[in-house]
Length: 148
Ligand SMILES: [Zn+2]
Image 1 (cartoon, helix red, strand yellow):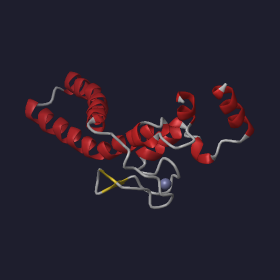
Image 2 (cartoon, helix red, strand yellow; image 1 turned 135 degrees about the vertical axis):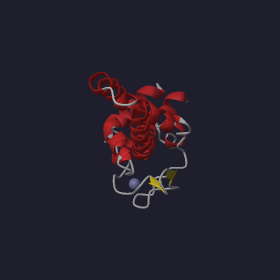
Image 3 (cartoon, helix red, strand yellow; image 1 turned 180 degrees about the vertical axis):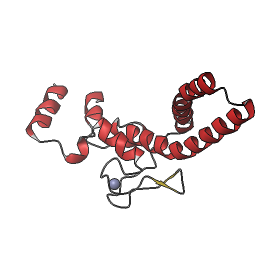
């Protein structure tokens, strides 16, 4: 009965803009260091520190729990980006081992530095879109109604 009442209420009132959290839009905004909610404010400051809240819309970012996921994702992405070139350069040109080590390590470090904030912002956008952790609970959240 409560579910039927809730569904009727949801269908009779249009979802507010904040209720819709498109997954890819949120992830891409986060990857661009933009607030997943408004797309204007920034998520990160000082390289990879998460701001307390969006300066434009006030979205609270304290609920994020990215933890170690951004470095893992960055390692995964960088590894896949350089794995094929490493093998192909070795196979086609067979450069000296020292040059390979220096070159690929330098490239891996540069890519990691560039992609870490991108991955962290994207993961925070993902958490926001999926209402994970501290981004979930609002008094009229449909999940709360279904649990009661
Ligand atoms: Zn915002």
